[in-house]
Length: 194
Image 1: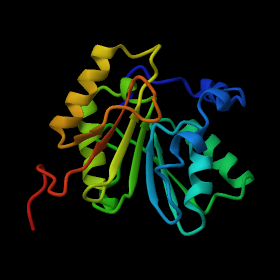
Image 2 (image 1 turned 90 degrees about the horizontal axis):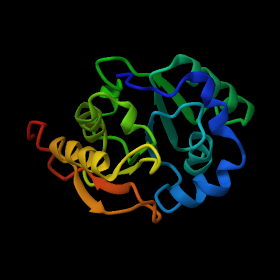
Image 3 (image 1 turned 180 degrees about the horizontal axis):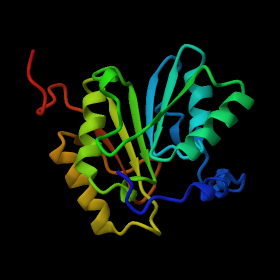
Image 4 (image 1 turned 30 degrees about the vertical axis):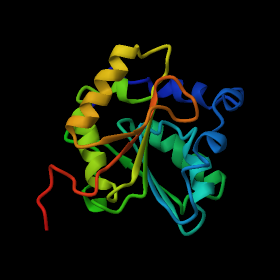
């Protein structure tokens, strides 16, 4: 799945406190996250959003953080342990076949794709994995960096999401220019009806 992936050593730079002034995880995600939720965060890196998510879901919730780089996940595990959140953060190493979320099909309350779709060579496959994991009607928040992703490229990502079965629910997340709220429909078209 790696395609122009952010190098692991840059993960430390993405954790700088100044970033919280521009992109505060609690303000950005707080309206979407509730205690006890199961949240999936692909492209988590070293966990800029993950630790705040773990605090928001509380001890009865869980954040499944997925990345293609073991060094990023190792950094996240260290940070989660230091913060006393290791029990709420589960890390998974993605592989070329997908995110490895098959055991969570239909169970996830919220998924986040923040600043990472442009790094994935097959966005439709990523969206398909996330659609299968989400509960019917559950949201996927998509946010891409304006400086790295053109309006046309973002539109192509939304088309890939639609081809994987997502429906557009809102044009933006917290007023971010390259963002959208997508929902998994009640009847996911690529799954057999039961």
